[in-house]
Structures are given as structure tokens and as C-alpha cells.
Image (tube, rainbow, N blue to C red; front, top):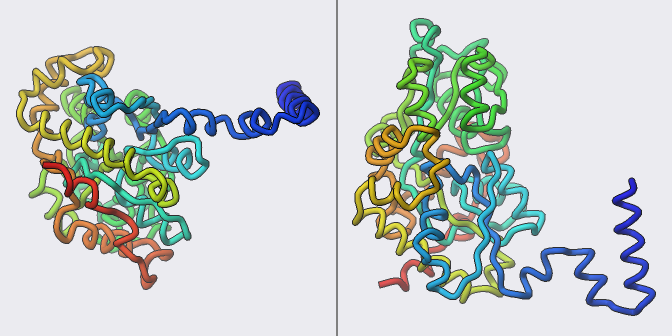
Amino acid sequence: MRQGTHVFGSLISCAAAGTLSALLALASPLAAAAESGKITIMVGGINKLIYLPPKLAESLGYFKDEGLEVELQSQPAGVDAENELLAGAVQAVVGYYDHSIDLQSKGKEVLSITQLLVVPGGMELVRSDLARDIRSMADLKGRTVGVTGLGSSSSFLAQYLASRNGLKVSDYSMLPVGAGNTLIAAIKQKRVDVVWTTEPTTSLLLSSGEAKVLVDMSSADGTRAALGGLYPASSVYVQGKWLQSHKPEAQKLARAFVRTLKYIHTHSAEDIAAKMPADYYGGNKVLYVQALKASLPMYSTDGKMPPDGAEQVLKVMAGFNPNIKGKKIDLSKTYTNEFVDQIK
């Protein structure tokens, strides 16, 4: 209450002084950042390998090379990052492309301007003590599925895999457990039976014997087997209204990210890991490098939406989501290759 009174008093003072610009700056703190050209990018879990490109681009100085002042922030789940974007608190998000389709069904226009991953890059893991009872997603009846957040891409994938195996949403429950340490704790405390996770958490759980692989979507073959096709995942997405007035900045962002993707495909896992903060290793650099080495094929080589990629994601989303099934979704308003196509 005291903080709200202080802010209200400040606004009144600004108005009394007739300083309209100061009033607007207080009412909308991000206006000043936008005015200065600063771009804040929210990442749905910045230390996950599926979201490696933004931190790597920063470490390599690629944003600065483009003349961009970029601040990276992190949220534990993509849905939280998405909410920050819709609130106008950030200019861009690094999260799964499927949010663009989900948001269009809710009347929001968000577009991916650079595709970072061609597959989801993660796995559904089952607790080791339940591995004999849960052999596929068809065995989830009465079980609890751990997801990063409700409405997150991990929940989208879990719901689709369950529906593909004949289950209804009411047959199982979903529990938001975040990622990393909180997810590992949920497994150890037996609060979840199956959980979606990505590297390096996947390798930590498998190497410790806490979990076993149920569905592998870290590779192209595994993704096709699970979903019936590729599933373009991590991307850089922005609001349509921001894009209309910030095309030069979007072009620079796309160029920095595509350059980063090219670095990933022309350097070793050891070279890439050396550019990342030490605390990303989870206390085990050797395991981190191994996980990164196995993950390199999941990254896009050119930042473009793969042929039929958007259609495949829509097919998956429509498979379980009543807000999308049977609804007209204009995929051309969920992504664009306009900026990556200009990069040589």
C-alpha cells in the first residue's frame, strides 16, 4: 500500500508540474527503454540448451556488432515470458513458436522472426520407480504430469501426446514444476510421475538414475515418431504491432541470431560451452558439454521456418486444443521469413 501511495503521489506531482513526459514515463517505465532503442528479450529459461542462442549471441558480441543494446531476462517457463511480452514489459521473447498460434486463437498477433530449433529438443521422462508401469503416454490415466507451467509449450506437447494415445485431459493432471532444480525436486519428492524437460536437466536426471526416457523429441527421428513430423520449437517472437514500426531492429536481431546459429554449426561443443557462464553447467561441465554435443543437430542452420513446419505445429495444437480445433488460423501472421531471407 505504501509503495502504491508513493507512485500515486509521484504521478500527481508530475501532473501538477505539467510535465506530461515525466508522467508517461512513470506510468509506463518501458517507454524510456523503447525511446532509447534498448531491446529487452525475455527467455523462457535462459540456461536451457533449447534457449542457448540468446546468451551465446550476447557472449559473442553479435548484438553489439549490430548496434543493438540488448538486455536478456529470464522466466522459468515460456508462458511467463509470453505474458511479459503481451504486457509490453519486453520487446521480444525467445520461446516456442507454438505460442504464436495459441495467441492468435485468442485474438493476439505475435510473429516469430527467427526460428532457432527445428525440433522440441526435450523428452518426456518417467520416474524410474514407475518405469515398469508407465511404458507410454497411454499409461498416464490417474497420473500426474509435470510441466514448466500451465499453458506452456511443455503442457501443449503433453496434452497432444496423451490425446494421441487415446486419453482425455480429465484422465490425468498437470502440475507446474518449473525447470532445473525445482523440476528435479518434484521428481525426487514423487510429486510428479512423468515430466517434460530439456538439456542439461535431462542428462542430470538420466545419469543419476532418477528417471528414464518415455518419449524422445530431442532428435528429428524421435520427433517424427512422436508427433508425425518435425515441430519447429524455440524461436524469436515479437508482437505484430511492434514489428510494424521496428523493422530495422527486427532485421538486426535476425542477423545476430542467424550469425549465432552459424557459429553453433561451425564450432565444437567445447568451444560453445566456453562462451557460456559457468553456472549454466549445473556443477558438471563434462556432462554439459556431452549434452550440448548431442543437442547440436536440433538447432536451425538458417533461422528459417522449415517447409510445412508451421502446418505441423498447427496440426498438433488443433489435436487437443478446443480453442484452435476447427478455427481459422492464419499461419502467415504467426511467423515471417522476411528478415532471415535477407541474410546472406
